[in-house]
Image 1 (cartoon, rainbow, N blue to C red):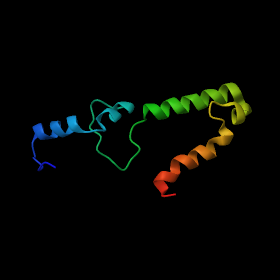
Image 2 (image 1 turned 60 degrees about the horizontal axis):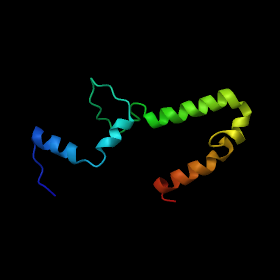
Image 3 (image 1 turned 135 degrees about the vertical axis):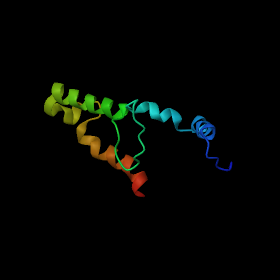
Image 4 (image 1 turned 180 degrees about the horizontal axis):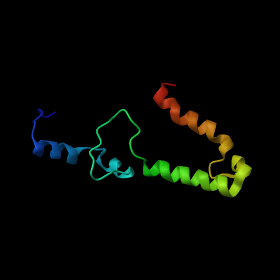
Length: 91
């Protein structure tokens, strides 16, 4: 590991080497702001928007049938939520 250097050049180097740098493209950003609050939801992610729009469209077009006929049937969402949340809750 390199010793930290308090320079703009070093900060750009770290940004370029960051393995998560492309992940930022999945979020909406206000180009006039630098977002540094790690304790907030921040701006909407494009992934969340896509998922929400899909479910709202299913609700609009399928109504109650979304429980069994949605792309991801709503009735089974409890299982998916459990599978995804188990890893971060230590289960």
